[in-house]
Image (cartoon, rainbow, N blue to C red; front, side, top):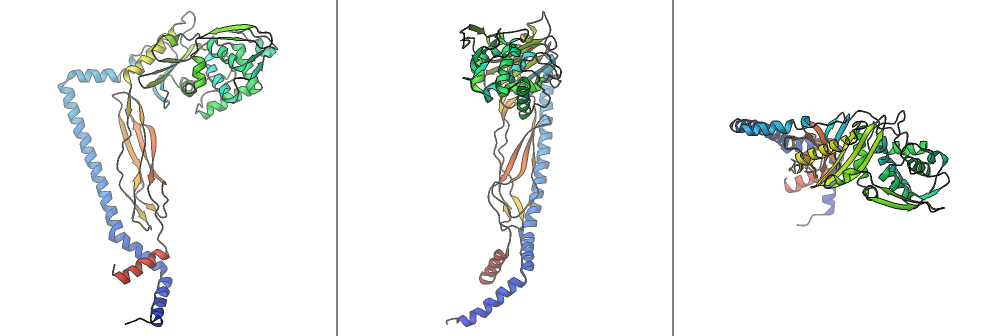
Length: 443
């Protein structure tokens, strides 16, 4: 028996008219179907599952605490070792007024004493002078010496007004022997003036997150308003040592060069004794003024560890060697107590309910690499900041939350949690198709 078109069209018209007139009711109806046929039930189930997992986790933590306490009671030496580890920081006998040890790979502070105090830093300033120059000028540039640069006091190359040098040669003079006249000549060439170059140095410091640093001079001579902190200086150094040209210059033992116009010859030798004191030493810079005392920023790369040390105000004449002793003690502490560990927890996250979505759930993904230096006694905890549900429409790879990693209750990193697929919002077409499917197929 064949159906005539004239018989089908009225039925179809009635269906379309019904769906159009009652669109909002239909969307609400479908939303209620989702809610009570699965969404709310599964949401309650997931909530209860989450609570159960939390209770189980707390029980497991309590169990672990009991086991650990029993082990410590049975093995007295374990308690002694743990106590030694916890007090390792207090056992350091440093002379510096301010000291700090940093993981150069992620700028995490591993140790500090007064490391956030604003202090003068003498010629360690030249770390920033060098890196700003490398990033804003060409090594083949020709630098003409000004009268102002030529009359800088204290440590000098003894350049003369009107002389010309290649910028590359002056950088070796700057970093190997810390010549103050050379620092000003470089600053005037790159920044137009000492003041202009100081602005460039401060802009770079801010971009690195060094908010407690202010540069006035390019050479580090004592000046009002010229200061940093051990932490900020370590950040600057950790940035600089990842510049290949910077390392090439600061690790050179000696350098020969000539003035361009008259051919006056010079030889500069590296005054950084630390390069020869420890295996893996790669820098960085000494400094001294009457206001700052002896200062040193050291760097070492060894056993998958990249460490930066800073000592400021580390004695005054005649105690010139204290900065080496403090630096070695800081580096030994880092090498002995810190091991490379991966703390990222690659977990499978529960699906996230989607309100008003054409799919009831969104799957989530999280990826990360949190390899860092840690002591054995440091505790890692993770808190997942994820909403109870999201609302359609949802785009793929949208950030819906974060996994927050804490080390000893201090926030270390936030890893984003992403959606894995798009979810469209319920609309007229979707409702129409669902109702037609229900009528035709009895679903």
